[in-house]
Length: 356
Image (cartoon, rainbow, N blue to C red; front, side, top):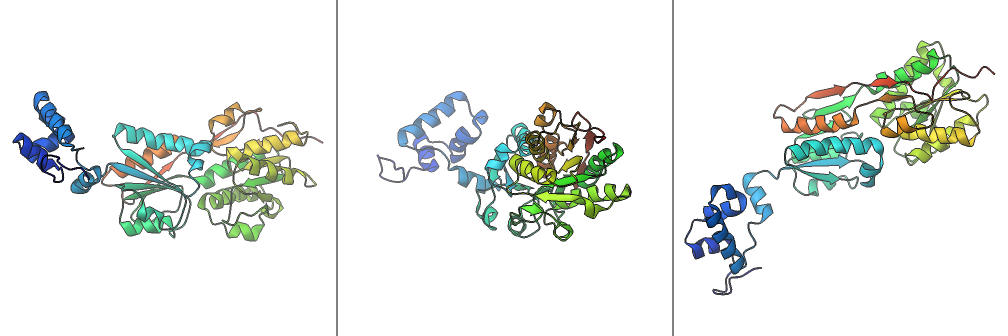
């Protein structure tokens, strides 16, 4: 605690005001609204404050007095490293950051953790939930706090804004592209379907118990396209590995390519999984797309740079982030829904099935 050496008491804003013979508002303005004072007066206030050992208004007290902290919270359901390592998450974070920079807002990142973690986090005015989880856990804690919030990619909740894409339509377009090329033996490389770190084939029962909305919707999209082509969905093998990432895609693809008859095309629920599949094809001595076609989902920068360049479903990750942050700045954001477009981008990783 800082004290006034001349009087032995605690140094406060009032101490500085009394020493200068000015109002407390004048001292406060020197710190919070310097444009309201002449340069000479502000210098006098700050010089006197330094001489007395006054460090300035406490930032927490200032934020509480005005009822706002000028900060957005961004909740991840994954470890914090995911925000900086997963290409799609990085693009999303860039979009949120752009709005925060333009609006002079702080951004507080909140990683996965105990269900009540959000309720105990540093002060924020509103929250973006970039997580595909039901109402339990973090979302319940946010609802209890009464904070404005927007859910991105997760479930729609009453009283909350929502930003997402038509996962089902995007997935159907990927499967339909392969079917139109003549492929009939397909394999699916899935993101986590149920939160249990499963390693293996996701049978129909497991698919029906899908915990994550995006995985569930993409499976439905694939299935609808397959069945519309007159094929049986149960004949399509779905492989799931944990933890999510490129290595999971590689191991899932290896399992699919070991099947007999071998699939002629693999559909991955993300580009990271698809890039792992390209590596597995190389491991197996298969040329893409001559021997095997591969389709991803996301269109992250690495998709276009892959060898061969990856056919994928494009979704606007950065715009998702911008839209979610902007939605929270609007008073009318409650119950607003923004569904952003998806588009199939055909590149060199897909072609007709091998003739043999």
